[in-house]
Image (cartoon, rainbow, N blue to C red; front, top):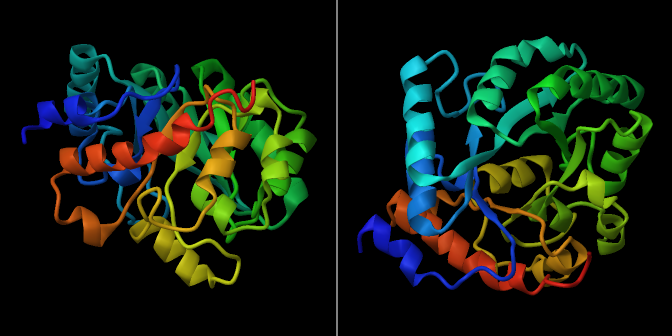
Length: 289
């Protein structure tokens, strides 16, 4: 099967919902390749990790590379696929929002909609102040700062994320990112998800895994970065989660599984992930305005 044929074999997405090919689902691709794979497999957007989540960790190389930027912009122009989110900004104890000035500049050039933010500072008062500073610095670039709760971080659940954003004054470009994996493995209920104001929800991420709060930090990180499951292959309540989220909320398909994806080229894996996600996303239609 050729890459261009994958999209024709996918069921149609329900309603007006749009889908983004997350970095972790296309981590084998350069940014330009990810855009073209997304176009060939039925996605409207991509997510790019242009800043690693830890020093020396994997990333896609584009910052400071003019040719890579030109290639990515050309792929966008050729395909109509947009960039939804960029990764990643981590708010630690010695946070300086200007560390990521190059990321903001590239995000504006790519017309990205959001930057994913993680909260690592155990001092919530300081973390909240720095999140507000980040939103202020990012405002001129036209992107939202979407705080993702993760159970091993200083923002471990949906209630904590909403508390930080609320105490930061709910800046106009503030956001909360809901990842199905972290809902399934944190002390987060569907009522907590429904309590997040619509204005703070810009996109959500879908995957599957064994649900529960009994995992060690190492196990949670390993699953998140190496061994997520296709929707339907785990025990996370994806049907309930998608019903709790707005029916038109864009969905980032984030399924990294080194073992499974090794048997498929990037375009086939992207198509497999989207096909597994669509039935759950369609069931959310009409659940929340």
